[in-house]
Amino acid sequence: MSLSEWRKVLAEALTKAGFAAEAPQEAKWLLGAAISRDGSFVSLNPNYTPSSSEEEKIRAWLQRRLKGEPLSRLKGMREFWGLPFHLNEHTLDPRPESELIIEAVLKWVGAHKKDSWRILDCGTGTGCLLISLLHEFQNASGLGIDIASGALSMAQYNAELNSVSKRAQFQNSSWGKGLKKKFDIIVSNPPYIPLRDKETLERGVREYDPPQALFGGEDGLESYVSLAKAIPPLLAPKGLVVLEIGVGQTHSVSSLFQKAGFHRLFVLKDLQGIERTLAFEL
Ligand code: GLN
Image (cartoon, rainbow, N blue to C red; front, side):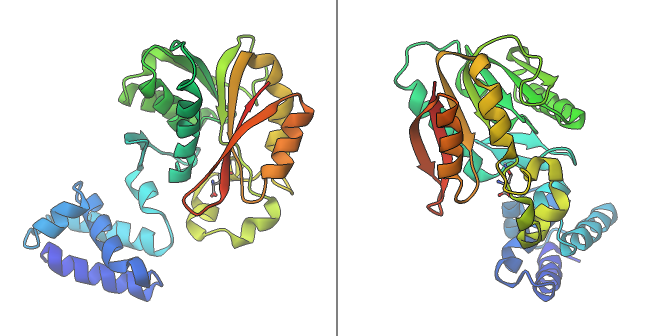
């Protein structure tokens, strides 16, 4: 069967499974990824006939996709800040809105002279925040911490993949426990979804992202309580803290940090207009 015929079969199956609006695009991406190419290869080569092993993979990936598994999990890859990151079951699938953390750091750094930043990423997962920042700042170095060892090995792999491994370290730690050094820039995209919202999450998130990277206790704020306590002794004088937050958490997280002595510098909104990223100084 040619790619154009496969594309029809996949689009029909995805439509039936309720992916109606995105089915034609999804079919193209899924097909491209399953044959280790991209969507444009599928558009440009409608007469290409996948080999029998490629066909097997197309069928298997279609079945997994129909059960709700995100395409990034099937590929085991996600692009973030223009860089490739591998995923595993211990890491959150990086989200585009988390790129706002990199933008926030760039905005702050623009007004400062130094470039040998020491960066800490709390709950590093794939390492996407730390690695993207090290990629931006060629004289910076940093540490990514996580409580999941399976995430740390993935982050280490991603640091090598993106040629920053000489300047990156990864360590098992819960919100900075046991760390002695100080950092100029501390970033975190902690778990912040309230447990009570679990059932309202999209299937691809609920069933495929690791729960410990998603949920911040009953009210979603538990990680910020820990971070507001852990960060002050780890932050160098005049250092920056940038945090991602969940929907409607601006006020609660700001007041937790203000009570710990921080002042808020700015708030960034995501493409949906949701306040998503908070920047603080001590
Ligand atoms: N941003 C993720 C989501 O909305 C949640 C991950 C997190 O809690 N940081 O699905």
